[in-house]
Image (cartoon, rainbow, N blue to C red; front, side, top):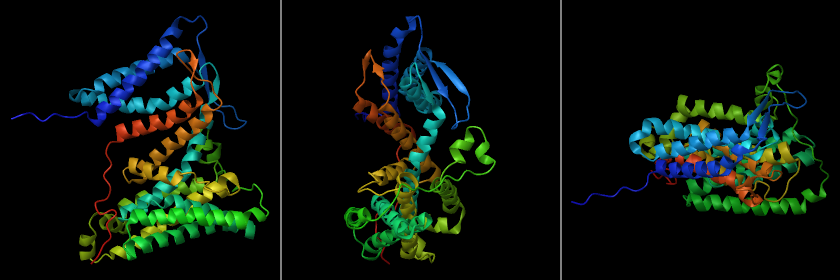
Amino acid sequence: MTKRRRGISRRQIIALFLILIGGLILFNYTPLLGVEEPLTTTLTFSSGQTPGPVLAVPTTTTMLIIGLLYLGSGILGWFSSLESISIPLLWLSGILIIPAVLIAAAAGGKTNALTMIAESMRLGTPLALGALAGIYSERSGVVNIAIEGMMLFGAAFGFAAFVLTGSIWFGVVAAVSIGGLSALLHAMLSVTFKTDQIISGTVVNILAIGVTGYLRRSFLVNLPGGKITLPELPIPMLADIPLVGQLFFSEKPIFYAMIILIIATHVVLFFTRWGLRMRAVGENPRAADTVGIDVNRTRYLNVLISGMIAGLGGAWFSLETVGNFDDGMTNGKGFIALAAMIFGKWTPFGAFGGAMLFGFAEALGTRFQFLKVELFGSPMPIQFLQILPYVTTMVVLAGLIGRATPPAAIGRPYEK
């Protein structure tokens, strides 16, 4: 009998990636060891006008250590017999990507690491909200690729309500409400009429592009509106905590709402009867129906909540960040949020981690536009620098998080 040949495992793929990156780092920085004036990267942690800690890092030495760690982790990670050693090293290598990229990008200069982290969390806010929206819908068995459209509806109608009423808080309420209404359309098509859920979500996305574009061209461009956004709400005493205060307690309302929703969703999903019923409907709707759970009602309610959260994510764009509305301003963030949800394995904290990593990638891509990074003595093309954080993030997430298994009954309409 012939032996079945085993393919390359996921861990070995990430090991190859680390070997490649470690080799590039060593090849790029080893020639700099003999330089008389070694490069030093200064990482500051300043909060506004308040000076913070300053960390001077020897660029060449630090990058060579990280390169050796990557190379060693990749080599050990290739052998399945060394899992007890290699897996912790692979996780450490994934975590070190963030400081490694910061040090390499600001080599010989100065960068405010605290500002970079704060910007990453800010940009990750709509992604986390979109991922939460996906969790509520998909945990109950309804695929929701309409999050992008629900966000776009929330951004447009929230800004329109603000301009017409003069109340920015009313605009937030309107964004949440219109997100819920668009979700009800998705629920009606996919739950009641049993339309293919991918097609139903696509309908909502296309409808959002058309309706919001018409709203902007026909009404919003003729209405007076300034660049007013939701105010910062520093939490007394907590905002004065060094480092942590700027990151978590000196932000705007939708950021706080995102943090609260992450914690609340975790509690609801795993520690309440409602969460148990939601998961039961998503895993085995027939068994749930047998014990008296109304499957379609549960799905309707969860899709509605999903749309309301997505609408709040849309309000982040127009009311918390820009203070205006532009066509397609969500720019595909709803789909990235779904990726964060899948990487997080349909769990709130996992999705939050994925969203923050994508937020860091976006912040880093923006920062790279103003930096000159050299590889092998030549400047790297700006386009390569901008896609590098996203590629790195996806490889690390896919390699370390592993295969994500969705709820068993997802995408399948239920009939008694």
